[in-house]
Amino acid sequence: MGFPMGVSMAKATKTGASDIPSNDAMADHLRDGVAAMRQPFCVYAADETLLAYNQAFADLHLRADGTCLLYPGIAFQEIMEWRQEIGFFAETPQNECDSAGNKYSLRLGDVIYRLADGRWMFVDNTPLPDGRLACTWSDITAVKEAERRLWDATQTLHRSRDHLYAAQRVAHVGSIEYDLRTGIVSWTPETYEIFGRDPALPPPCFEDVPKLFHPEDRSRFRATLASDPNPTGEFRVLRPDGSIRWVRREAELIRDAAGEPWVRIGTYRDVTEIHEYQEKQKSLQAELLARERLSAIGSVTERLARELRDPLSTITYSLFLMNGNETSRTPSDDRALGRIERSAARCNQIISDLLEYSHCGPLRCRVYGIDDWLHEAVAGLAIKPPLSLELDLQAPSMVEIDPGRMRRALGNLVENAVEAASERHDGRSPAVTLHSRLSNGGAEIAVVDNGGGITKEVLDRAFDPLFSTKRLGTGLGLTTARQIVEQHGGTVELTSCIGQGTVALIRLPLAEGAAPAHNACIADAA
Image (tube, rainbow, N blue to C red; front, top):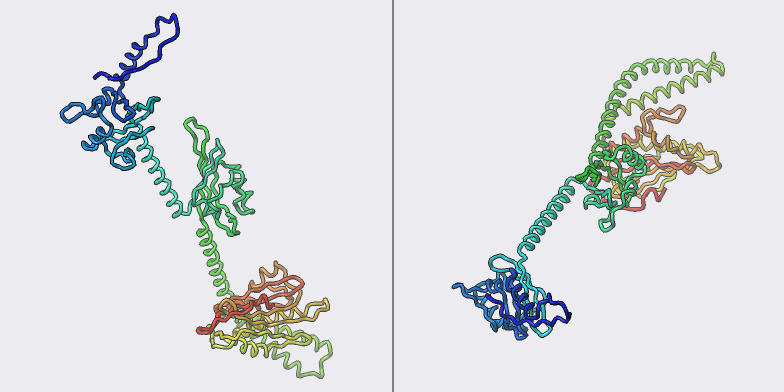
């Protein structure tokens, strides 16, 4: 069809330019160009009636019989009503009504329609100076399809990322991506969790990554990076809260199409539980070896006891006979006999200690008031002046113990404390105090001395069997004490400060049904 639109063009003023078309010719060219446009085009008057349109716009408005709805002067309201009636739009436009909602009204600017046939149309409504409105329709279906594919790809990427994050969370694996060209570092959420860092904070730069590890592992981590661009190893992570985790690091270098290094991805797997399990296995193995060693000691001790007790009995009986014949002995004979007697007694004591340590029989427990039992237990301990054993007992509750075995454990600790306090030579009076408290649902018994203290090297080996710093010690006193306490379900530990003294602390569970009272801890009292 033709393009029934009047075109007013300004006259050309350049004289002598015979090749410039006249205004009428230019209007004809413009009219023909608009008519041949593949994009629908139309012009509305200020009163929203249709002034002109091209064939592409007419083709959008064909009735079922093939005739065109449009004609110059038709109102926009009528066009929209027809569109609604035949289902022209896939989605009804919501913003082309007036304020009363009962009349369609043209809008200025850009409008996007989705037609019933699936096409998307972008309409550019451009106002003209005299109030007319020029409308150009552009098919943007391909753009919308590209947007849809981009959206789908984005959603797929997001789902893949979410799946990655979920898998990393389950596997306790985080990853760090380092762009070698831009220097940008990115962390996954599980990486923040492993390193104990706030996800709201930016990740540290590549050069600061070694600072995330334990100080003792940093040099090894740097050395690993220097020797291998994609190192694999296990390192300790030092979290901001002071906790330590073990991680296994693996890395991969990704190259671009030209083979140039592009991105390095490092994965960090939390293997703390594996290390804890290995440490537990080592502890169990050590305990098994200790039990086997103890069993071997028991067998050897039992055999030695049989072999040694008979000659010792003969020596002791001979000493008895010699002590009865005082007329023929000289003072030097008396001194020699005294040494023999003391040595024989010491040998008997060593054999008894070894037998007790290596043949730890079942407990014969009874329920006792803690403080009452302590009063009775210390009454039989031999404390020589000027040293005295002071009592500070504040544990009014019950424990279930084997009194004889526990008395032996307490006696060993008190004996050590008395010897340590007695060895002071700085003018201070030697003192040993026995404390009792209820703490953390259990009972605490502490033997505190003001001796010279114990060095860290000795303290680390204090409970080792047969280890002793005493010239005549057996090295079984503390070992036996710990064995007895652990049989009762408790613990014993030593703390010491050079020049100030030592604390031997026993912790025991309360008897079943005893009220778990609480008061000041032993450390405060000591």
